Figure (cartoon, rainbow, N blue to C red):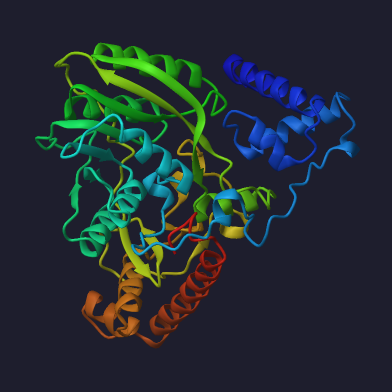
Length: 427
């Protein structure tokens, strides 16, 4: 363990110890009192403090209390039904979406900062655009998002909405002179810098930039990242007006709910994660080079969607027939993590939106099986066309086994998604 990690653990312990001394007795209440501490990190702190005799573990409900089949939560209770149904988030997209109250707060905050006829740019915030469309929000909005599935969905559901497929940290930016920009970057240093650079370039002088920023309990070293973001914003001509702590609740996507369950943490409130909101005003126009974003980890995956369940496969250049059997990577087949830093991610060849992960020697064959299932074609015939020959009896059996296994997984995740409140996840 590094000194930075040890210091972070000690800080978490101090927060947890203070919360227990103030009378917090349940795990969800503890999470709500902490500044964005991941549930398993908080749980480990409880175990450390209990083992050290800091408090009586019998007086604290260490096992998270049940809140319904998938954990329930405050955001879920509204059970709002949306006219526009977004694709389920996939873990490879760093896709956490704002809860209903966060969306309303951001749109309400932008109203007095803008005037009728002015434009609000939305960077990576599809749930904000959806509510703006559905509520006939009295400002112009334009969404820039890298997720093709989300962009296609919104473009089809609302043809008059302005939606652009754009990676704001790499692609050329459109010519926009927005009066406000709402930014929801992945909470990693390079993405924070890239998104704020894009926001500054899209915002007019005198306009405002609203950024969801990671709270102080997010991970070791986050203080450094937060300070670096503020320093970078100043260089870009953005003046910080205020930061509102824990004002932006997110809804845990299925992949995070399953990751927590894999760690033995069931019943976690789905809105436990809350971002800070930093509001800037653009003081002057500054031209600085765009920050570089590493590309080594940005692999290409092939995706198929079956009954709303998204499955991604790492492509293979092989055209030979290889057994498409799904091989175990982790016990239980659910990666017990949602962090990009998890070393096991490199072992994964097949990844579902429910965070189920597998290896496979026949990835090229599996892709064609999934594609056939998605459009209702025969997997055996589709694979035969791919390898340009008839399949042997043994090969047909292997394809059939893969179809049975994938069908089991799809049905399992469809069932899980149906149990999650619509306000928290778009099924």
